[in-house]
Image 1 (cartoon, rainbow, N blue to C red):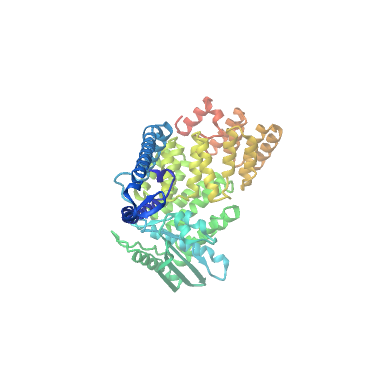
Image 2 (image 1 turned 90 degrees about the horizontal axis):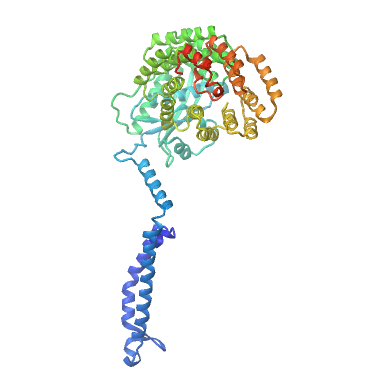
Length: 562
């Protein structure tokens, strides 16, 4: 008890008891053979019984023992009936107990973390730096192949690829991704020849469990993926209920162009979208039955449309046509169904069809991150924020470093008015990715809602997306007493972006308290079937309009709850 209260470690008590055990027999012998006298310590045989002070010493010892016992009893009474009965102590104990129960639920089996892996982006060793799309694509395809093994936990691409190009300690990476093993390697591509080196490492001690180098032609790329996947299964001693998944065999040239298109698309921007679409179309000329390439093409068209680089009608027609071809080829691919649900909800406003599609996708791929994300978006669109949050949390349980899910959690909390929780989510996101687009603007909006315009302005200075930064400044300026500057900036924003930004413009007018102008732009967004209109429920910029009957009318026309 005393050692606990002085926060002594457990070994101190063990050593103390060891010394007592060793010393006890010596103390007994010593007490029997010697005696304390007024002249000092003497052998017991040399002491005259009439001069012995044993009775005096005994009385002193008795008094000391009684005193120690009184102190011990007092300490026990205070500890038992005073300290532990204080409300603060009781609450702390209950909190600790509850936390322990939550951390170790009754009857819950411990997770088999030994059957877990992260596929880090393979290093591009080609002489041409532009071949990086191939090494990245190969890494992602290996990840997707391994993710099809139910008995194996695989970190997602968004999590694993955060470490691309950085110097890192494998043990630290594995801890952050909550995996026990790491698959890494390199790719050298020259013409139709590839050299792929792969190695499986146990993160805890750096032990190389398996490694191999493949010198093959590009025609054998899918066989290499299959061999690596089988080697991982064998090295980790995974007992499969079925066979090891096999890579889809596609024309190698079409496959390479598909990887290139996805890589360029991820770089974002008008020119990159155009180059990505060109590469994807070239892949489809070579391999018209490539369903995933059609799905990727559909997403590229949609992003062009929402970014204002393609008209709404043309973009939606092209996107719908591409996804329909993907569905015709492979109607049960969860990734394709998730993209169809996106079109049905955000662009066609066919909520019933979107829900039916996403439910089918959830049955086919209940743990597919793209499907879970689409399900969360549809739930939020229909006002079911708790359900939406549950989907996002499921993603984060699987992938704690998923940046998109973290952003959407912060956004959902903001829509629910849970400002401090939302702020925490966005801050966590910025810890993982300081250059995340739009996140500083979201934090600026939270600070404005909390009546802290100066802090909001300082936050907006850190925003990396110029467009989002400008929207944030237009929102913040009136609170800083600069209304005329806010109006000038808003007018300039309208001139430059009115062709595609009707919904954001409506939000800025609503924030400034101009309801009539806000509804004018909302009606324009409605007529344009603006995809951003699907986010109208609980939009933090539109709270000023909540009691306006015109909002209920608009929601009714959209088929949304009101």
